[in-house]
Amino acid sequence: MLSKKVARFEQSVCAACGACVKECPRSAVAIFKGCYAAVAAEQCVGCGKCAKICPTGCIVIEERRNEDEN
Amino acid sequence: MKTKKKRWYDYLWIWSMLYFALGFFNILFAWLGMIDFLLPLAIALIGGNKWFCNHLCGRGQLFSLLGGRLGCSRGKPTPRWMSMKWFRYGFLVFFLAMFGTMVFQTYLVFAGVNSLKEAIKLFWTIRVPWDWTYTVGMAPDWIAQFSFGFYSLMLTSLLLGLIVMVFFKPRTWCAFCPMGTMTQGICKLKNKEHT
Ligand code: SF4
Ligand code: SF4
Ligand code: SF4
Image (cartoon, rainbow over all chains, first blue to last red; front, side):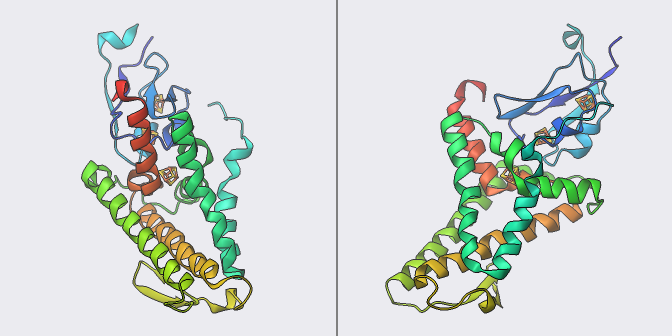
């Protein structure tokens, strides 16, 4: 079953530092095209570790919406 | 939790520390810092990505290590304005202006207008004698002048990064790092359809 919460990334602010990639226990984050972080929503458990480490504050943990479930 | 396999480039924080140590013994090693200047730009220009930032940046890794595992960061949220466009680009312009000034100083020594100054300048204002790292005549004066200037810039930015690391998140420096801003700008231009 998918978690209630999910991470969402604001791409325009992301510095692509990769800290969130290293931090995620589910390997749910990748640097898309090497330019900004993006999450595989179905793998994310909404633990918030990525948001805690992110230096630019571009990750928010929020309620999972229906479109995240497929 | 899975432990991620370490790659050779996960240890580049050692290079970052070594760089500053070498400049303490012989300032001419400062030129090696050009690698950290040109490589991210080359990767961004050729590959259109920030692979340098998320794989090869020893400085970023050093901040992660010191601020993360070694607990030297308070981990407070980075102030919003530090990652805003106006600050990122403003700091980049300031940084490039300082770089330009340093290149001009080098030119003045090359042209014989100024003499070599065996000192570094921290935070663009504080002059620190650094003469034990160089014996006059080892290299043309302008080569040495550039070394002192470039090392000053590298050390100043490292210290700024360490200060924001202590107060905020380990990698807060990455929010407004001039290299990161430049490569991000290049990425955006190269991947216009995604911005
Ligand atoms: S919230 Fe947790 S699981 Fe989801 S991307 Fe962030 S670190 Fe990974
Ligand atoms: S930690 Fe934040 S700034 Fe760094 S890659 Fe992840 S989302 Fe981007
Ligand atoms: S933003 Fe700057 S310090 Fe951070 S990873 Fe990129 S080049 Fe390194």
